[in-house]
Picture (cartoon, rainbow, N blue to C red):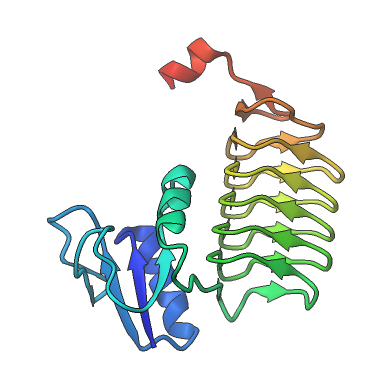
Length: 204
């Protein structure tokens, strides 16, 4: 079974390992950097526009690029890749093309959108809704009934209190604590998080 992974980076290496554990025995990469010829021993056989036959997985961290490539290959199978040591409740709903990494926990009633990254040792508690192309980073924890909008990035080690809604297009800084709703896109940092001013955000 062939899997074409787009993005021969560190994230791509993790995705390839999870794909191998999911039974894929024919893995190739695509990458737009012509100097990259292999990734974790698997060949890079072309650019992101050159996908050969097979299922396609988008292993790109940037949510907008991930969305664009997913839409480009909308007619292909984009599998759900789950590490065997992730814990996913039986009634969780999952869209096309997400990855759930080792040690992650997704509890009952949660809904995971298309192209979501649920990173290592993160947790998504009961009845959470994670929008398309969001990223729940390493060690981030969402309490019950949290809503995360499309293309929002929850940083490493961040914590979101229960019943909180975070709109799309946000970045929550590493270690941040979200204790109330966030209604405007932007970058939020601190404990509890506060929005960075535009001038400060542009210099960091």
